Image 1: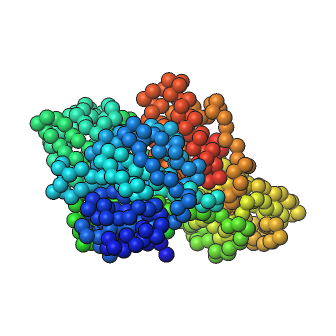
Image 2 (image 1 turned 180 degrees about the horizontal axis):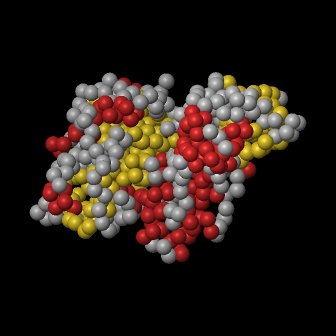
Image 3 (image 1 turned 30 degrees about the horizontal axis):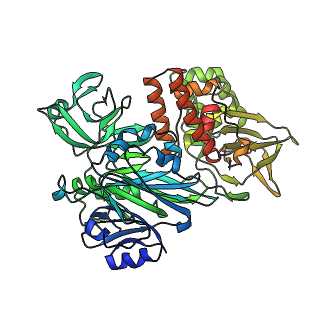
Length: 329
Length: 264
């Protein structure tokens, strides 16, 4: 039985010292008390568990992975090395990425990842590490290389795992949001910071449009990727300056709509997840869902993972549950 | 979100009789007629009374094979096409599901059997009337699905050492048999065209209807089409064709449904 869930730092120390391969999420203080081992970690204090979604500063979330230490490599990547995550990935396996929020690596991966050669034939999942809301802007999120104990506020940490023949990594998402029936919004260029857009083909300033239409910016922009619903969340709307900042980039040539309202996030996620992903090796969700959906103390299904500052399923996503399963090939 | 997993060896599962197939047939007739012919016109062209046509369309008729054949002909369709439409639209997957392992190979022997078969990918439709003693065999490639509906007589099906008889319907009795074959064969049996195949160009331009089934393929396809539309230069198109082809080569063994949509 693989270890997966919140535990005391003492339990986490014992588990990681035994040599298991794991992904760890906790506060910086707790991460610093963990022993060297076959793990990667990131700062995070918001979690989803089968019992509840919660904030914790005295427990550690350990996700033990179903691979042996001999089948993994752990590497860190600076912002200009991120494309190598794909080339370094095993021919058959998966890669779990953690990137510090707000770092150059975060921005670079957000904007460039879809253009990395081979990205979509390389199973890559992961998350963006963060801090408490009170610490935003004053304390930097970290990633940790468990083998060396090295912390970094600038580097992505990646665990590459080989899988044996006959086994394969399968990535899926659960997204309770659907594009509404409202306006179609497109953008002239890729970007995390947007001024101009086209609304139903008419050029508009996005900030002005959002204000004038009284849009609920807690709801993400949703794009239909050939059947997959992909979210981009609003970070801020500066109506005076005419600038909208986003948590993940929009891409030119993609049609977006503001999501239809979701009455009950917890219930919507429980429906979206259903009984699937029982065999999940790894999962994560989004801090925006935790906040906007008032999920503290509520259960959203049977999955365990961090509530992160960005989710990665190949590319960076927002307000989406990401799941990695290991299945028969 | 999980994909169907093939069994290692052939397995036969009897699911049960199709639910109200006559309703599906009636709906197919109505769809084919709608906007093109009135009931009276179809009655005249098919030689089937308007009253019986009305009953058939409402799923309450009990037409013979000959009657259905006349209706199909008057609608400009073959009987197998009409039945395949009914199968596809009804969502009534099958009565008998046979999941095949590595090598999918079956033989059929007909006894005045009228069969309608539709392959899911590309929706190719075929059908024939088999005389007693007629034999054939077919090989299904990875992910392909063939559906066979026996309208009349019976069909003997042999899967390696396993034999089953699929009873069709007697004349005048409701249609009742579907056969579904699903298989996943080794990747080596699939041929992925080289990068200079012109169909790739159509594909990356978004000109081929495509419904990918995995998150990776959905994301990749969407990015490729938008990138090519933004920059249709030859180097850029070539780059994305290679990217897509590389994807399908890596996931060849599970990409047959997608490949069938593009190259089928």
